[in-house]
Length: 289
Image (cartoon, rainbow, N blue to C red; front, side):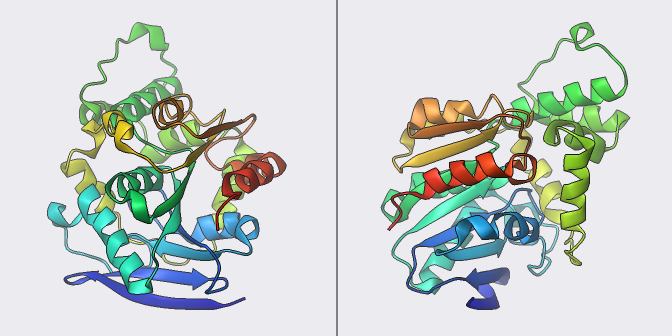
């Protein structure tokens, strides 16, 4: 299989790591990992077999994963900046259009790119996307309560300030423990993901995540912008992913398109329910030319 690995200049002083795989003349899919920060490594490990026959672009977003580190400047880590990188990348590759496959936080980037450039967006495929960060902060706060043995009905949540909820949640429990409680339906699921992630020797700095906190990401509810999106859209949701289900159903309500709920699956449905996910992703990619 063809594979080209490179650092692509997308902005003044900014390069991103890219694995360009598959036939050059095949329909292109850019894979947008979650985060902020992180790497496309585990997505390639999990999704590659489902994307055979396409030209697949595995991108590590700016400042994270195997992309070069950037200074701790909030202005370098905004939704505008990361979506702008996608425009530069598509131009660099000479692509007229592509499909965007976004997972978690990557789903937000895919949606915003499609909102800004409907003519170059062939299709959106969103797997457990994150669009309402105050709601997600509330979920993490609830998870922190559960980990401390506190009944949720004893607490009244105000979701307007997701940053405050996040700070309160993580003041009492480790962030990883709270996220794990939302993302993984079982210990087996978590262990299989962590085994897969161990293959990535470069984890990247946590600069993107910290800078996005400073930029107010956790106060962002993207829902009003969904009405501007015109691209065909498929949303795949794990019914046991408490970080996106049921909130992300709003995308299908407002954008239209397909909604596939995968029973028994968490944030990584190809781990929890591989057969159901294979059918769902196959249906989502039908019609891409």
